[in-house]
Each structure stands twice: as C-alpha cells, then as structure tokens.
Image 1 (tube, rainbow over the protein chains, first blue to last red):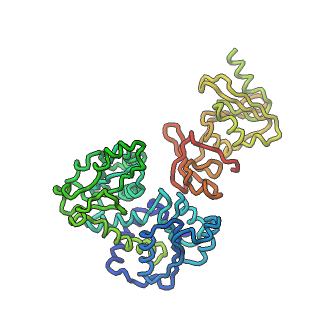
Image 2: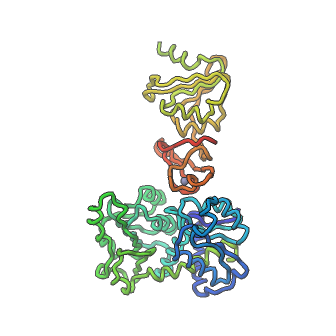
Image 3: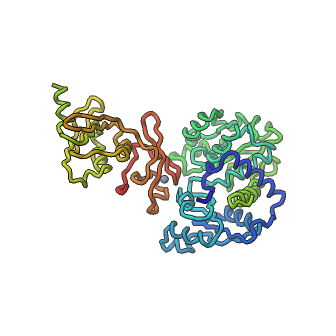
Length: 301
Length: 157
Ligand SMILES: [Zn+2]
C-alpha cells in the first residue's frame, strides 16, 4: 500500500528530521518544477480556506495541478455518496489526495481505499499532521535547533488537537514541557503518561508567568467558552490566559510566540509588533512544510 | 457438600464446554459472541448463581461442542472473569483463563460517535491494551479509546 500521512505518528523521528530539512530547502527555493505533470486532488469535505490555500499554493508553486472541491455541498457527497465510493473514483484521477473531513478517522479510511498517497488536512478533532510539521519547522527555524526546547503550551490543553500532536512529535526531541491552563482544561492524563513513559519532564501550572523567563517557545491556544460547563468559571479564567506585551519583558531574546490561528483575543494586538510574535510567519512556513511532505510522499525527495 | 455441588454444576455434561464465572450482565453478550443462539446442540445456562469470586455469576454448558481460541479470546472483552472448562467423559480435561485478543476486528462498536465507523459501513479495528486489568481498545480510525465498560457488540463478526 502507498505511504500516506494521516497522523503525526506515521512519521518516524528520521522522517520528521528529513521533512524539516526539505522544508528549509523549499524555503530557499520554493519554485522548483518538480510536480510538473502531477495532479493533486484537494478534497475539502468541510471548508477550511486557510489550509486549502496553503496546500494549493504549495502544489502550484512546484508546478503541479490541483483538482477538487472546497465544500462537500457542491458534490455527489451531498447526494449521499459514501466516502468509499468518492475516494475510489477520485483516486483514478490523481497522483495524490489531500483531504479534510469533519468525521474522525475519515482520512485513515480513505488511505486504505485510495491507490495513491493521502495527506490528512484535518479529520474532525483528531489529527492535522501538516500543522504539526509546520509548527516543528517554525521552532527549528527560530531556535536554530529542535532538540531540548523549553516549550510552554498555554490555554486549552484538554481539547486542543494541535498541542497533542505537537507534544507527540516533540517527544522525539527531548523537549521540556510547561503546561499552563485552567484546571478544567489541563493536559489529559494519557499524554502526561506518554511523556512519563518516555522519560520526558513536564511541569504543570495555572500561572502563565511562572516559567516565562526560561521558555524558548510559547504555544498559545484559544480558550473557548463552550468548553466550560459553568460560564461563571469561564469568566473567571478567560483573562488569565491572554498574552500581553508587558508580560514579555523578562523573556529570552530568542523567544517566539506561536499560535495555530485563527486567534480571537488570547494574544493582545500589542504583541504583534513585539518582535516575539511569530504566528504570521508560522503560517508562511506551512507552505514549505507541505511542499516537503508532498514531494516526500511522492518519492521525489 | 460444597464440593459435591460444585462437581454437579460443572461436570454434569458428558462432553462439551462449560463457561463459568460469567458476570450475569454479560451472559447474553457471551451467548451472542459464541453464536450460541444459532447452534443446534444442547445448551444450558443459568444466571445469578452465588459465586465467591465475583458475587453473582452466570454459567453456560454446551453439549458436544468445543470452542476455538479465537472465539474464546473475544469473551475477554465482555467477560474477563470467565473460566472455560473442556469436559470429556464427565471429567474436566482442560481449564483455562481467557487471554484477551491483541487486535479486535469488527464485532465491537467504536464508542466515539464522531468516528467514521459510526458514519459509514466500515468494519471497526482496534488494538487492545490492558491497564490494571481493565481493557482499552484504541480505534485504528479515530484513534480514540473505547473502555471495557463501553463495549457494545455489533452483530456481524
Ligand atoms: Zn473510532
């Protein structure tokens, strides 16, 4: 069967390192025509303009062609066609499938049905591995290394799939984790156990300032009102996890702030031009990381 | 008296299989798993018997039939306390505890309502692990865990 990227676990440490190297190569030279004559199907069963454009830009810059849809309502899927049948048909038209789907596990299933590699661009609350790779690339690029990073993850650590996947990936690289969240949204026990079993240290606190001066990376996530059973509790904690510029005074010069975007109010606008904000460049890195994954899975790099 | 009773309960069939120490709530699941509702051999079952090990228990005796390890391993999903005895000539010739399967294919529903296997006709697949005697099944598709107490049997295996 063809090798696909559905979950960040599908890549070994060596493959991740290889992808990060390729991403740097594409950043230096993003317009190599290595996808000339290739067709990539971009199947967005739920809309995600940001992710879709990033993938399509990645393909186009490498000289490939994109076919597909940006919303399942416009397709035979809305007429009740099964995912199985949709993938069986489209696999004949392309060299690779990039797909986003609201149902968890849809991409894994598609990768079993398809005869071409499948890249998961998000399956519900489950996985979004290219986000993780662009996060890793952003860390490596800003810190000059990927090993032994002090990373502080802030906000909704319970439901945030991006922090879970990033944690899994960084566990290959001996990161030191600080988890900052309200009690209701703490990192799930399974991930803490996973780190413990790998001999990786983590520190848990509800105080965002506690480890601020040591951290290399702050990874911010959104604290959503819907996650709280008690709205009073939400009102009490919501401002405790908002990053403002005056909080960054004692941070390392090389410290950078990442965020998977879109942000709502968890990073104050005055942080944007602090020199430590990196969330917009982070998005740009997504194109290089995706070029790296696409060319790797097609056996071109 | 105790001993005689026990002997009677377990070995009153000449040849076949006795499945003992089934939690009463799992009795019908066990019958389902082993497709005992479809067999034509003699079958006895009893439930809410007293058990020193598990409080109340259920018991199944199947005449002239032996279960294969594959079927038996699936019993661990619903009745991990059960003991299987093979009876030949009124004697217990083999008594074993159940080893859970390492992988489960079909048969159990994924507990995650947002899982693709609950949206399309797809055979479920899990890898099984056990923590403190409690089984957990990790779904190959949605990657979420179905805990033992959440196990719901799908009919076709
Ligand atoms: Zn599932």
